Image 1 (cartoon, rainbow, N blue to C red):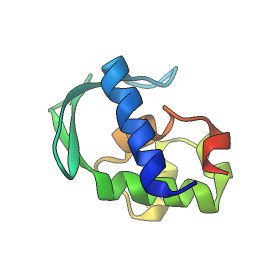
Image 2: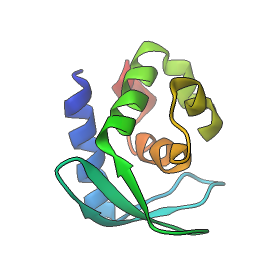
Image 3: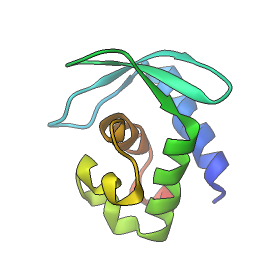
Image 4: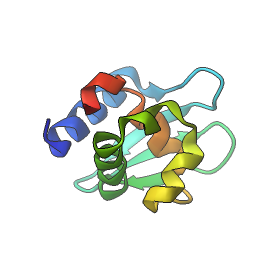
Length: 101
């Protein structure tokens, strides 16, 4: 499936739920969305801007190597996603691993 369609699904689910939470990890709340980013609240920190480009990098990484889905947020560093790897990872998990295959 096209990565931008998957991005749209992630954003819609995040907007609808107002929270992104993976069991055993901190949660992220929905603040707002702009034309190129989504803003999240952090359970343990400052509100954060997450660019759509970073989410798309994660989507494409999961499409190329679906096994990354089962690894923690640190696995996204290998894709070049730093500083926002935890919220990106959490947002990616609003979809199922099958969505990336």
